[in-house]
Amino acid sequence: MRFLGYFRSSSAYRCRIAFNLKGLEYDFESVHLKHGQQKAAAYAAVNPQQLVPALITDDGDELAQSLAIIEWLDETYPQPALLPQDAVLRAKVRAFAQVIACEIHPLQNLRVLQYLRNELSLDEDAVNAWLARWLGDGLQACEDILVKQGGNTAFCFGDQPSLADICLVPQIFSAQRFNVDIAGMRRINEVYEHCQSISAFSDAHPKNQPDFEV
Image 1: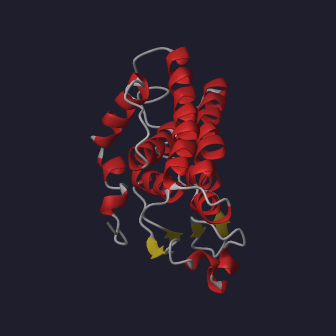
Image 2: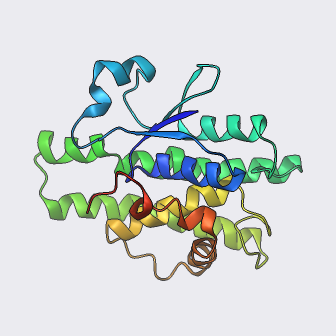
Image 3: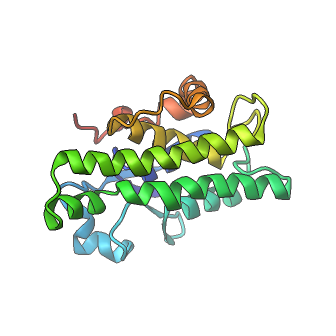
């Protein structure tokens, strides 16, 4: 498999965690977002949306969107499962993942921040206020969902990592990167710290990637 991504992309980060949990190897190709490599014709031919990540399977199929890639991995390599067997709990895990992937993450995307800075001429204070508002509100919703769920499990929805944890960990990394204060969100911080003690998560951290830059 060929995995095309970028060390700082939280979407690519999600996929790296899933690969690691499954114990799968892949050939990595860096697509440097700040250099605009995602807009090059060769990459656009793989993913017309010009976003990372993308996965090219051993059969040559080209897949995009991190949640779709992760679910394909889970269906193709079923163990360990990344979604619960129980239909209701599975829907809750998917919903939690979508809060992050569909509601929070798009508002911190590089192209959005570039638009705020370049097209709307917002200064860094205004951009930081945007990030604090939307990342903070979104992660508070994640906190509230887990508190409502109840229990004191090691991971978001049980004692095994799931798609929910795969999405949460990169989003907390992004909050730290953008200096968004989430110190009062006890439950998601506990899950994050536990995940960091597991090599599948820690090895996927941006600082441990071959294309890492300070």
